[in-house]
Structure formats: structure tokens, C-alpha cells
Length: 68
Image (cartoon, rainbow, N blue to C red):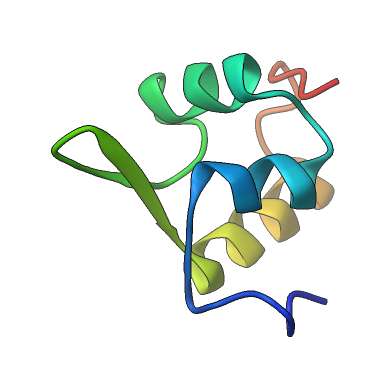
């Protein structure tokens, strides 16, 4: 599913994968809906953690998070 991406994803990668804008992506990261870490002024997300987060959402996780 994410074979073309590095193991550590950037905000731009997340925007492409989730098909959402940067504002929404930053909001989800700041509110800890998407598991990520902030290194100075940049966010990074493990590809494996993103996959698990998406799987959890599909299986009935916190559906109050709107990503569209």
C-alpha cells in the first residue's frame, strides 16, 4: 500500500496518502489523532504506525475524526 514511501513519512507524504490538505494534516498531528513526533519544526510519522492507525479507524476506531 505504501511501498513507494520511506519508512518515515513527512507531512507532504501524509497529505498524498490521506488525500487531505496540510492544514487538516497538521491539526490531526497536533491533536494526536495521527501518531507522530515533532522534530524541531517538522513532523515525522512511522509508516507502520500510520498503517496501524488507518487499520484501527477502519475497524471502528474514533470515527469522530473527519479527514475529508
